[in-house]
Structure formats: structure tokens, C-alpha cells
Amino acid sequence: MESFFQQLLNGISLGSIYALIALGYTMVYGIIKLINFAHGDIYMVGAYVGYTMIQEVGLGLIPALIISMVFCAILGVVIEKVAYKPLRGATRIATLITAIGVSYLLQNVMIYLMGAERRSFPSALENQIFSLGNVSISSQQITIILTTIFLMTALQLIVKYTKMGKAMRAVSTDLDAAQLMGINIDHVISFTFVLGSALAGAAGVLVGIYYNSIDPLMGVTPGLKAFVAAVFGGIGIIPGAMVGGYLIGIIETMVSALGGSMFKDAVVYLILILILIVKPSGIFGKNTKEKV
Image 1 (cartoon, rainbow, N blue to C red):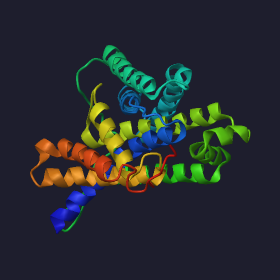
Image 2 (cartoon, helix red, strand yellow):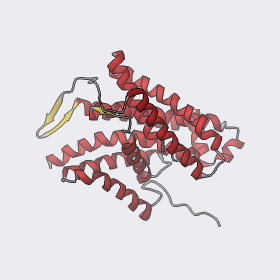
Image 3 (cartoon, rainbow, N blue to C red):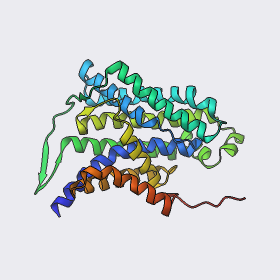
Image 4 (tube, rainbow, N blue to C red):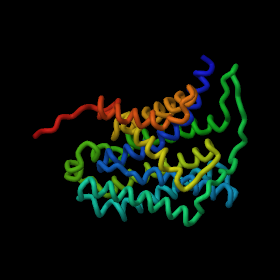
């Protein structure tokens, strides 16, 4: 039982990172029905910004985290304006291919700027271990969990109680009706990319702390897993992305603990296939009927 609780704690730490990335996927899809496959690479850029701020500039964790979030928020808006906005009326496949192209562009730009080698993430805080019996949790895990809870709570407050949050919910429900009511769709979409990209930047710094290493391709696998988490919880639904992220993190950790570390990724993708077959709308989603 103690081993179970230990792996549960590890899974929550990992799931916190997946949840932050999944929120970006689910918000963008909820607003403009776009699967932004470049989102995982924005998270990678956030990790490198945090690395530079801590290693080269000498800042602490909190200032580096904030700067990374701001930089990624700006990057997300630039990507939306340059790559996605001109294709807003285009077919789904055109925007999807563009998103994949932006993903490869970000990867190769980072390889050019920082090199292709893996880098050790600097220690931004002293890592202490707290034990209760045979169950232990590190100060790094506590920082990751508390930071994630704070950011997700702030997101919920923004979406539920601010004017822009209400506009986001209106656009998500019916874009055309929201536009007729005087809501500026461009501002809402840009704000959505700001929020999602900022959370991805925070996740990049937190994963650097968690794994102690970063590289230009680090956004590919976690990005796909976060997408699975968003689908698992119900893509387009913010609480679903949170729950899906934590569940994927816990499942992956449990599989590794049972000796399946070699195929833990396969288990996550198997979950995606099963969800799409059994309940495509996800845990929190509702099946909708389309008129012919």
C-alpha cells in the first residue's frame, strides 16, 4: 500500500505537467476547433527560456517562471496571427498541416540557436526529501504540484468571473452568435492563445525541474500525451483537461512501477484509441447529434 501511495504521488507530479499542457490544447480547440500540434513545442521553448534565465542571467525560479510564461504568451499570439489567422476559413486539414509545420519550425530554430544536445537544467531550488513512513515526497514535487494548482485555479477564475472569460465561453458555445452580440472574436482567440501558451511555458520550466534535462525535441512526446489527456477528459472542456492530465500521469507512473517502463508510452496511446472507440467525447464530454 505504501508503494501504491508513493507511485500515486509521483503520478500526480507528472500529471500536473500534462494537465498544464493539455489546457492549452483544450482551450484552443474549444474556441476555434483547432488541434494546435505546435503547442508541445511552445512548452519546449518555455523550458529553454527558463533555462536561460536561471543559468545565464542568474534569476530565481519564480522570476524565471514568470518570464517564461510571458515569452511563451507572446510567442503563442505571434503564431496565431501569422500562421493560423490567415487560414481561419480554410479546411481543417490545411490548419492541421500548418500546425505541424510550425512545430517543426520551432524545433529547428531551437536546434539552430541552442544546439541539438541535451542540456542539464540548473538547480533552481534546494531539493529536500520529506518522508512519512516509506512514502517520500521531494520539495521539487511539492513546488510542481502547488504551482500547477495555483495556475489552474487562476485560469478557472479568469474563465468564470472575468469579462474576457465570459466572452471565451460565449465564443466556445456559438462563435457566430457571439460575434453578432458584439464580441471581438480576434481578441478572444488571441487571449486564448495567451493563456494556453503561458501555461505551456510554465510547464516547460516545471518539467526542467522534474527531469533535470531539456532538449529541442522534448515537446513531442509530452505534447502528444497532453493531447491524449485533453481527449481523455473531453477536449474543449477545461476541467476535463485537468482530470485527464492527472489520470494520464498516474497511469503512466503505475505502468512503470509494475515493470512496464518500456511500453508506458504505448499504454497512453492505447488509451487514446479506446477512448475514441468507446466514448469519443471524453469523460466530461456529451455526445452530440448532428442534423443531416
